[in-house]
Length: 259
Image (tube, rainbow, N blue to C red; front, side, top):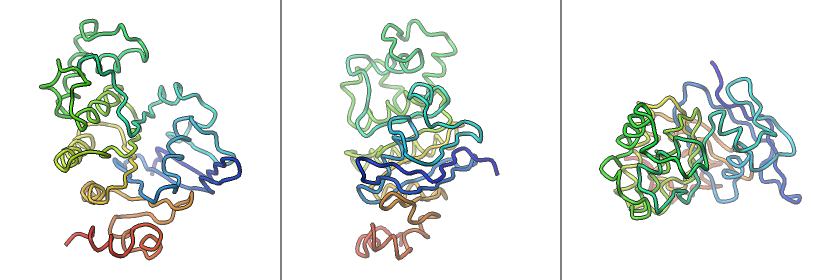
């Protein structure tokens, strides 16, 4: 089976503190979503930092699409090769409209003169399709800063999708959302699985959201103290005694286990 992402023996040290310790992870090409969970300080965000060129490990390998080593590449080159990342806080242009934000994302990064009026017909069609996918087509002329919190998160996801990434990294995408917004985000992820070619790897602490996403049969990786503690279906990891003791807790597991 072909591998999209191969992480081997990854170790990251911050002034002697090992944020990642010999971490191994494989994401196959046919996987659409991989969920990363674990307690604070487990190394989840540090892993994303390595994958996007923000942190240099002291040991290990990261191979993308069976051929490309991501280590040592700049953030821009990694993004150009198809690895895109969304941070917890939406990174949008609040004074620009939704469609202008999309045009900026679809064009050259950092080129603030690229507006929707200057895009090609094909690019406009692509932008409209992605906005429809995340439910923001009715808000095309709305200033991004006037959107609700969840809509801002969806806009940034759309801004990344319009760039046609191969791997989309989402860091706590439902943080601060209402219950209804979280449920809509589950639907958006399902739409990405169905209509987009990219794979999604996401970090999340909200176990109810994780449970809803994992219903699609997606694998869950549990990180703890910088290494993989458990991996597999949600049913498997949430009954793993090591996971229960280290992260979920017996009371919390009971509350999040499907009836």
